[in-house]
Amino acid sequence: MADSASLDKLEAALGVSFRDRALLREALTHRSYLNENPTWSARHNERLEYLGDAVLELAISEALYRDHPDADEGELTAVRAALVNYQSLARLAEQLGLGSHIRMSRGEARDKGRAREVIMANAMEAVIGAMYLDAGIEPVAELAGVHLVSRAGDILATKSYKDPKSALQEIVQERDRVTPTYRVISEEGPAHQRTFTVGVYVGPKQVAEGTGPSKQEAEVEAASRALAAHQG
Image (cartoon, rainbow, N blue to C red):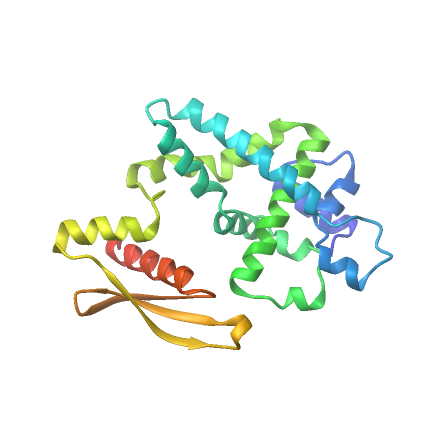
């Protein structure tokens, strides 16, 4: 919970000291918390999330433009997308220990997998929006530089900004002269909350499998795992 002592710890992880902590408390308040706690003084964080998304894109765009003069517009756009997608921001939120500070409903707190990642990523954007309103873009640029932009060189070198299915297809076609195929292995759960498990195959051989709330997302995870195995 976001009491003063825990906010001290979070500020230390972020490398900032808020002049207006009400902004930080708002950034850490999920909409669901207000449904169970209507007297809570802070608003939910969706407006700050909206702002943080735009501010983070600007900070990263400027850094990539400055640091990678040989990359073209398409590469810069793809790298930026890889740095600010919800999985990347959820990992950053976990690294900073954001999860223990977010106020959310008991039901949301039990979420796992993609649902939790989305909550974490959205809260990270909201915190960035709060940082911007409190002290301008400089602390946002510093945070993004240390934790996100620092990965850009490796992403450009390995071309890992490509869609996993496209990247895997290029590798398999060059190596094996065939196109990878995807097959649904299983479907579980009620109709409104299905979980799909999909295998990716090179010829008759299954090389990886992935799960997700849709066939498309399960295919992407399967391709990502196949790429990780190939690189390993």
